[in-house]
Image (cartoon, rainbow, N blue to C red):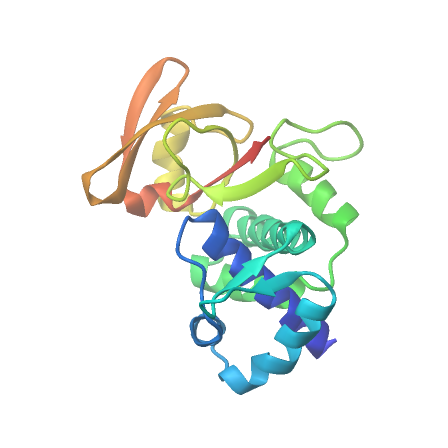
Length: 214
């Protein structure tokens, strides 16, 4: 189980690098992000390469393959839905919610996450769910801070109760479609919600989880 968890943590972290547009990391960067020693990662990285989930580049950086991207994105989605549940529904602090999500994300099933996502969005039980909860290869989970100009996205949830109150007042509910109009100085972002442009600070944009498909 420990090896499986580390494999998924590696793929999830590489996915975060990839989806945020940051440069591909080398093994040392990956170890730092995971709080591990590079030597701990080498046998697992070799296994992931053998299984076709990642490829080392000539410059020493690491990139995900198609299968690695799918797995990494799925693990991150589990993490963020669990994190949202703990912070938004149970009132835990964001740091505690993230720690709990890290512990549980490796054992929870895809079906449980699907149902939990619908529950968070006010759609418990069976059914198709909202647009932001989808199966298949087309989805990608990220925060508004990580989104790119021109992206059309669906709000999954707001991870913190403080800014969540203000965002609800602005119409940013789970299931709401938003468009990223532009990035502004200081890493802020302007989004369009129901024909209204709203400027969000990076601190608040980082709390809004969204999904896109394509």
